[in-house]
Image 1 (tube, helix red, strand yellow):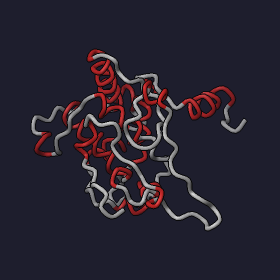
Image 2: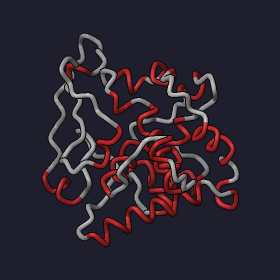
Image 3: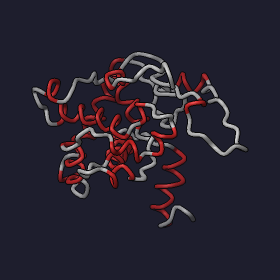
Image 4: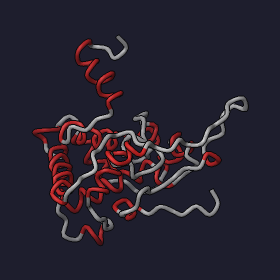
Length: 228
C-alpha cells in the first residue's frame, strides 16, 4: 500500500484506461491454505465492447459510446433517472431516507470502518462507502437541485460518460449489507445510495448484471423466491 497514489473524487471522469488497481498483497489476508491469485486480465474483446475503466474487473456491461451523441445520451438518461429517484411520484417509498442520506453526511467515515469491502481492498480510498456517495451527491446538488453555488459548497465534478459508467460500476463494489447505515451516527444509508444507482442503470438505461438480474430479480418476480 505504500507509495500508492491517492485517488481523488475528481478523477472519476478522467480519460484514462483504468482508474485504480488493487494489488493482491493489499487484499485482506485469507486462510494460510488458500492461495490468492493475481487478477486475470480482462479479455480484449470485453474491453473493446464495454466500459471496463474502473479497476481490475468489469461487472456491469456498459457499452462504450461510439459517438458524442451516444455519450450525451448516456449522461442524460442517468440524470433523468436521478430526477425520478427524487420525486414523490416515482420513489415515495425511499425518498425520505434518500434525502437524509444526501443532505446530512458529516464525512466522518465511521461507515468506512464498518465496511468489509473497504477493509478487504487494503483500505483503498475508492472503495469507501462515502466515495461513490459523494460522487452521486455532487451530481445531485449541481444537476438535480441546481444549486448555483454547488461547485463551492459541495465540490466540483466533471459529469461525462466516464463519470456515469464508473459510478455504475462502483455501485457493484457494495453488497448492500448496510453495516454502514447501522454504524452511521446520523443515519446516512450509503448502501441505499448504491442500490438506487443500480436502479437507474436497470430501469432507465436497461443495463444490468445478467447473473444478478436474470437469476435473481427476474426469477424472484416469477417464482416468489430467488432460491427456487
